[in-house]
Length: 120
Image (cartoon, rainbow, N blue to C red):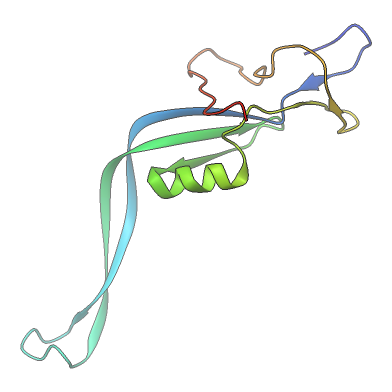
């Protein structure tokens, strides 16, 4: 966003979600090598699990992004403060700018829906 005084102002991040998406992760457990001897030697068993979870995408002004998945991801999103409406920053100096404007100007394409969880 270009303002009248020539400064480039953007929001530092944009939170998108929640969306239901399949998430694949690795579930690890130790199982006995011999099923008849449960207290004997154990081996690590790794299996891929796919679940449908709520996902949140946080896109940053410099072009990178990160995804938070499930209840633990939502708790981490709130802990980091990405559930709140971002303040605008000057991209050249890094200063916080308290002026009007669209804080969600990071969008290059109109494929995502923006949801802010709280204005606190």
